[in-house]
Amino acid sequence: GDSVTQMEGPVTLSEEAFLTINCTYTATGYPSLFWYVQYPGEGLQLLLKATKADDKGSNKGFEATYRKETTSFHLEKGSVQVSDSAVYFCALKLTGNQFYFGTGTSLTVIP
Amino acid sequence: GAGVSQSPSNKVTEKGKDVELRCDPISGHTALYWYRQSLGQGLEFLIYFQGNSAPDKSGLPSDRFSAERTGGSVSTLTIQRTQQEDSAVYLCASSFYGNTEAFFGQGTRLTVV
Image (cartoon, rainbow over all chains, first blue to last red; front, top):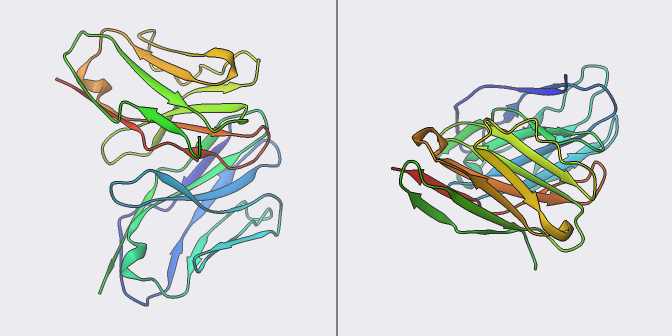
């Protein structure tokens, strides 16, 4: 079935470090892919998305590229800040279906 | 409204009581989703409504859980005879039809004592 496998955390980085959170997916069709972020005490917010192969989603310095050949959508940021501390969820969606979420990766950035 | 609205934001109930959680989606969104997030856990799918189609109930954990969506807008998630393991944050989201992003409400934190 359709699913998302996400890098387990927690991840702790120093400020200005490079971030990668791995995400791979299994889907029967051609999904759209998303990264959602949940800041402490808040709800889920869309961080970025990509709707077809080779698309790159980007927002707030974060990027992810839809790689059909490796069924991946890894999240990257070149220089993290303390304010990026949050839980990050990878997700996929096929038309007419629910969203499938990964288990979430907790990121803590220390000054 | 401007976003997905859920009420109440917090609910404490006694074991065995019934509870109703409400979700008011973004106007014009045809799809509505309910998820559950237990402490430190990921998102567990519960139910998905799309327009006038039969809902996908495959995620409901037991027959104590039910949901309806009236007039293609507001949805109510009902949990009967609540148990302590039902304690979680219940999240509602809505979207347009297709592979578009979902917008989430702030959730209802349910505590069963």
